[in-house]
Each structure stands twice: as structure tokens, then as C-alpha cells.
Image (tube, rainbow, N blue to C red; front, side):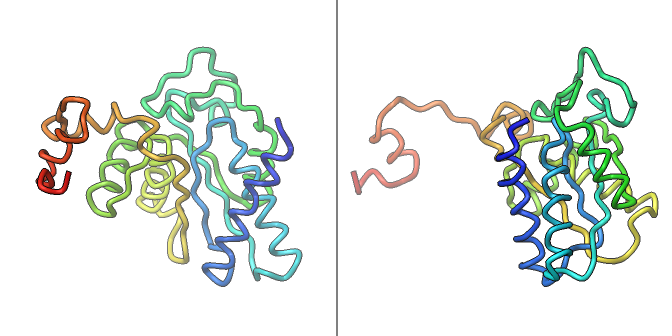
Length: 199
């Protein structure tokens, strides 16, 4: 694991504390290689220790059900999920994720591909956010634990980690009629957009 990556990623926790004026009560985050949950926890601890926040969040990480080695407490030799960015069978930062979970009285749980895709579509249709499926695992998980009563009240933050352009194939399954094949030219694009008089 590149330690500089963790040092960089932890600064997102600083931004959350700055934006909210404190740490959230619950932070939901996708878990693949587990670097993000490790880094965010480090960042929240630093904010708290420096007096930039008055509390530490409960860290909740979510793995895809078909790729959930931390949840199962064993490596997954052939991980399977639509969420390719978290399709990891042996996370590099496994120990850091477990520490974040345990030290924050949090949890690491799994969400199904159906739950991930439901959250993926919800983010697109209701919020206008085009994320990759792995990103939607955080919202899927937050919704799941809220329904189970494990995250009642307070401020929850769901981390969206990747842009939908990393996986346009999944998006095309939701709106196949929205796809168009155009000739490779500026003129064709301008005509399709009704801007042919400007080219």
C-alpha cells in the first residue's frame, strides 16, 4: 500500500468536517481494497485530536455481497459483483478497515448488486449524479442500515468515490434508447444538438 495515497485520501475527512462544521454521526463508504475507509478514519481522528471536530463518526463500510472478504472474514478467491471497483477478494488495507470499524464502533457489511443498482439509479434520477456502481454501495448501505434501525437520527454522509464514466456500460442498461451512434464529425454532433447553424 502506498502510504502517500492514504495521506492524500484522508484530507477528504478534513473537507467534510469543514463543510459540516463537525464530523458526521455516521460515514458510509464503499470498501474494496479498503484504502478509503482507512484514510477517512485517520483524517477524522486527526481533525478530532486537533480540535477541528467535537466527535468522531461511526465508520460504516460496505462491500458487495459477492466480494465481501472482510464481512466473511476470509479471502474471496473469485469475487463477483457488478461494482467492479470493489470487486476485491483480498483487500490491501484489510487491517486498517477493521481498525476503523472497531475503533469507531462501526460496521462493515455487505450489499447486494440489486441494492447497489437501486441506489445507483436513485442517485442518477433524483440527484442527477452519474456515479460508477461501486460508489452507490455507500448509499445502498446507508439506506439498508437506516431501514434496519442501526443508524437512527443524526447526520449521515455517503461517500461517492467514482464517476460513472468509468463504467458507461452499466448506465446504458438503464436507458438503452438514449444511445445514439453518430458519424465522427463536428458537423454531425452540431446537427444532432440543433446547433448546425453555428458550425
